[in-house]
Image (cartoon, rainbow, N blue to C red; front, side):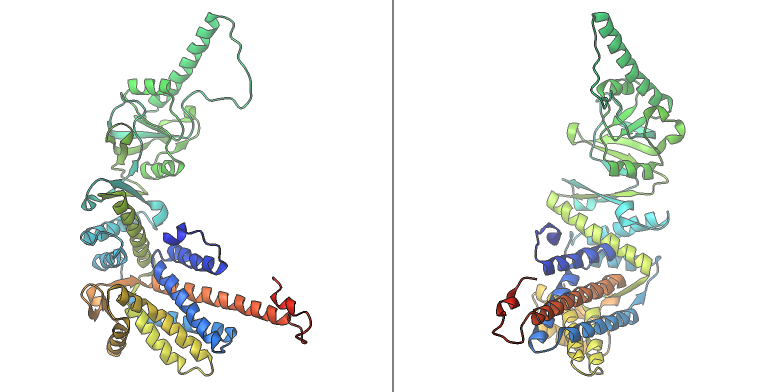
Length: 475
């Protein structure tokens, strides 16, 4: 979130931001780990280049180390089934750590799993499209709930319209329910009062026909992406029809998925077959701060999670935490594999990479060892953030991994525990994408740096006194 809001111009920094964006898109979590690993890897590379190790050697070493690290992760991973709800809740809880209310973390994690399970019954899950996150500040976090439908930050067009409609038959219209302006500049000339009266009567009749057609279709709720004019709203409210106007395109699409209603482009094309259904549509709140709830949608393809908290700051943090946790659970659904958290996976990778490096000849082993150090920077940062001595923590973890590769640091108790037994686990995809992203951006930057150095060297004359200024020529 912070990186998204930064105005960054440096090309290397932009590539690091891209690492975070890719990590978020593919894994849904682990953006901080990916950025930290990539940055540490570049620091290690810079040190080795100063010591005389060629950039191409580093590229080969990093690529070999990345491939080996992914192999280690797959060996280290544990299978988990979709029906293992307890494990899924622990994964969600781990993802939410430090991002949401710690006192309500278990309840929130359970809601995340409920949301994924509910949508997965309809088929494959697309978190960004199938699960809508809506904030409702001013309430308690433990009031956060799943709505089997949609919430709109809208209110009824006319105060005389019903505030609640049971057994709602919903029409979704993607055109204004009012007089539309013509695309040309034609003018209408009215010469007397009778002509004016006839014109107004015809216009009134047009409005009534629009409302009558909606009413005859059987709709008792009209949701319009454009405006609903006052005259049309008047006729609708007289017949007990609720109207909601200027609904966004995204919400229109979600409403169609939730209720089964077809989006109608022309009001006079509306028929009973186009209507959707919801058990209840109601307005809550007063005046312009009211909200519309479309509830009890039996065959909904989308659901809404209402994020509640005391302030907007709290609900903002909740939204980020839920977004990460939902993507993480979904990745476990798709891959079916997890790894130990608490720095256990990183320490195990680093240990095995160092052993692997000793079997590689030449300076390439220096690059592989540097890669191991970069990966191990994650548990070191975890320790430092917990106010512990990072070096001491790493040494203890290394010793513990001789007997159990799942030993990690419980930052809350300061104990060294089996992370799988403790329930502190991460999806395999988060870890593999972190390794892959960090390695790719580091090798890409090293290749570019190598090309630039070679180009500068080519521009130098064999006789230093000749055209020496060319060395600093921009390229």
